[in-house]
Structures are given as structure tokens and as C-alpha cells.
Length: 251
Ligand code: NAP
Image 1 (cartoon, rainbow, N blue to C red):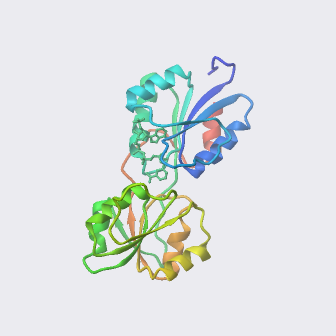
Image 2: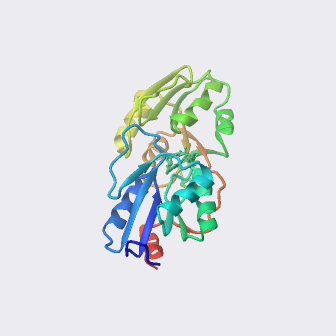
Image 3: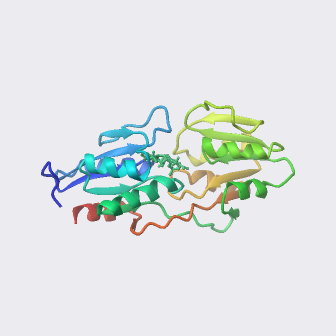
């Protein structure tokens, strides 16, 4: 497919992940490809990318269809986080509507290995239930928005790690905040969990390398992990590695 500018592909890369940044780097190196990265605008200071950035929602499927048409996009790559189900579904619907090549670039979920003490649950509500009634010291590795759910279990005390300091007060009552952006070294994760006397970790099963060291640290310390499964969104076309995405774009 030739785009109006003479490039073979004009790509909309839906981002918000480490993998999207790395993919942007690969695409930017290709002389016959151009593109831009779209972020939702959830963080105050987005990291720089090797492709131009656009920030903010599109306005649902209809808004995305309008955007793709106006921007003369030829290919859509969904490299959003595995838990960002709404934008993924919207992107697939809008691409299907316009007949654009669409690919989901995602991570394989983590699988338990010997030594892991996982309780696998389907959603946040089940994660809260799995914490039980007795007070616990909980490390929340679920992000700012999801952390609000844990207000419903005020008997526990929480350590929440987030990228930006919280703007709202909708956090659990006993909630200590640490601000940080991964990757985190294993030795630091071990120290953090020990210093804060954490006895259970709650994590989204996000897959990938960036967030995995806290899972390894929990294993080494013999801690239970309440592991929340990704939403059951099925993309019609999925890649798990950079080379497959680049071949798809070059085809
Ligand atoms: P979501 O629930 O799937 O999307 C909600 C709405 O946010 C979408 O309908 C869309 O608004 C807008 N949106 C989401 N991602 C967008 C993007 N890349 N570019 C433009 N608009 C976007 O998404 P979410 O779970 O809130 O995640 C938001 C962003 O944070 C994603 O880019 C994701 O990669 C990143 N992120 C999410 C998580 C997580 O755990 N969910 C973790 C790390 C990073 P309109 O309908 O108006 O288009």
C-alpha cells in the first residue's frame, strides 16, 4: 500500500507501554515508513518517543474512524497495555470499518513457576476478596486507577507504587505512596518488600519484563501474589515480537 506522502506505510501506533516505545524506534529507522504514537494522556510527563506523539482520547470508535481517515493512516498497531481493553476493541472496530490492516502487539501473560505462591483471580473485586478479612500489609502493583477499588477493604494497609503523585483522594485509607517508573532491579524490589514488611502482593498479570521483578522478589521471599488475569479481549491478529510486527508492516 502506498500512502499519499510516498511512504509505503503511515502507521498509527497506539502506545502507553515500553514495547510501543521500542517499536517506535524500529519504525523510525525505516525510510519507507512514517507514523505517530498515540497516548491516552494518563501520565504528567510522557517519555519521549522516536516518532511524533499525539495525546488524548479519540472519542470512541466514531472519533477514531474520523481520525484515521483525516490522518490518512494506512496501518494500525495496537501496542497498548494488555489491560487497556477499551481502546484495543475500539481500534479493531475502527480498522475493520475502514478495511485497514490491524495488528495487536502484546505480551504473553506470565505463568507461575515452581516456588510461586499465586492466587489467580479474574478481576479487582475477586482480588479484594482474595485478600481475606484479616489485616495484611499489601503491595499494590495495579496502577493508580485500579487502586481506588481497595478502599472497600480498609482493614489492610497498602503500599502503592505509581508513576505520578496522586491527584485524587480516592485511595484506600491506609495507603502509603511511592512514586516510580519501572524497570526496577530485583535487589531493589526485594529491599522494598522487606522494608515495608509486605506479606502479600497484588499484581495485574501484565506479562513482559518490566514488571516481572516484583513477582520474582515475591517468590524469593515466599510471599503470596494475588494475580489478576488480563481482560478476555480477543484480537483477530496478534504478534508477540518486534520482527513479526515489522514484517506485517512491510508486507
Ligand atoms: P482503556 O480503558 O482501554 O481506554 C479508555 C479510553 O482511553 C479509550 O476509550 C480512549 O478514549 C482512551 N485511550 C486509551 N489508550 C489510548 C491511547 N493509547 N491513545 C489515545 N487514547 C487512548 O485504557 P486504560 O486502561 O485507561 O489505559 C490508558 C493508557 O495507559 C493506554 O495507552 C495503555 O497502554 C496505558 N497503560 C495502561 C495500563 C493499565 O493497566 N490499564 C498500564 C500501563 C499503561 P476514546 O474512547 O476517547 O478514544
